[in-house]
Length: 188
Image (tube, rainbow, N blue to C red):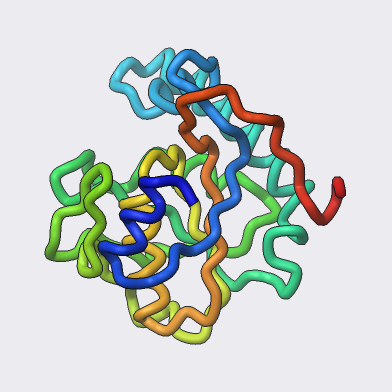
């Protein structure tokens, strides 16, 4: 576990949900730029980057969904923007909705009462709906930097009774060059 993941886990008082990144990104990588621009206010750039990311997401889930959740999934949920962030729906919702192999996208999370920020998770940072009890949930976020948002959202889903939470992020931010990711199940 990296320092941020450990600190987030300690703050939440629970082990982190394992996260599967589609790719590792650095501040200078084209994918990181795409992840920043697809939610920008400039419509032309945002729509081009959203189309590129949608294709990436679709290819990844078509190939690896069974690796992520061999027992299947009931719902897909996008980590919402914080209360003081952009208004719903999160732009990632559109990308995930277009993926044909995912289960139904559920509006199962909303911002909670406590603020969540970089390296500052909160157990009540998100509120889950009653519809997650007993469900196998795929939790999707765009960029994972410290894990505060995703892990706070995962905690809310588990506390609401989700029987499993599988987390996927489009990009896991890293500072140094890291080795290429491979799926342990389909590429040993």
